[in-house]
Length: 283
Ligand code: SF4
Ligand code: SF4
Ligand code: FES
Image 1 (cartoon, protein in one colour):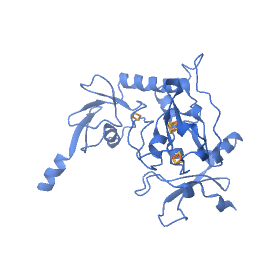
Image 2 (cartoon, helix red, strand yellow; image 1 turned 180 degrees about the vertical axis):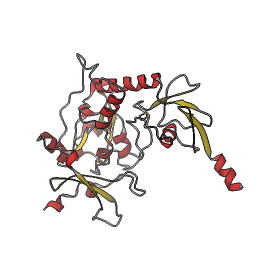
Image 3 (cartoon, helix red, strand yellow; image 1 turned 60 degrees about the vertical axis):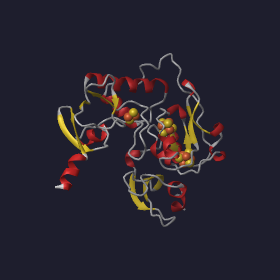
């Protein structure tokens, strides 16, 4: 009986697109949408990061709320009436996607481009005659490159480098307005910065603004064939922590390494050895 009461108290019920959904108290609206099988677009949200709420592509309508609310960070409350696919929601998501495309290069942002197709967003709509981000690609080592022409300022890399994962704080948002950029301290080159090359920022970047150098070189040679790659999960051989590695292999060569986000120990994060120390395999 006591157990039953506790369960009742720790659940909240919301109504989403006309369906009743019960989720544990403290869940976000996004969690409730997921529980109901509703595919909600997200850009700045990741399961392994604290929501920063900056992209606004996940907005939904909540009855009684004057403005649309970001589902990724708004906690679900008992009795909420939520609309995830109303005209207002669709229009807002479309606008967000078109504005994103107005200043940055989304050519390698596959997930964002799929959202644009879903919401009929023309990401080239505001490009003509307007300023776009145009900077030299930062190639400062053999591990990963930074191409901020592709950056949508989702903050995920900053979060991953900071207290959500790495606690290195090598990067932050610098500048104001159109001059906003992700930057190392005083824009130092990566080898001269606090970066420890864990690559956890690369792993969460949704646009390929941060990219393995191997991938960058293959794309440059028009030889990046993701659909032909295999992914093999294995255990890192460098130390006893036992992180899981996902080896992305093309033409019998490892071309990049990721880690499963749903792993209870590493949550998708690795250190430099697991992430980049794979070239010995091909020797
Ligand atoms: S590689 Fe690691 S330490 Fe370097 S900027 Fe990215 S998250 Fe920070
Ligand atoms: S570099 Fe990538 S992860 Fe970082 S803010 Fe830009 S788009 Fe987001
Ligand atoms: S995913 Fe919710 S604000 Fe970006």
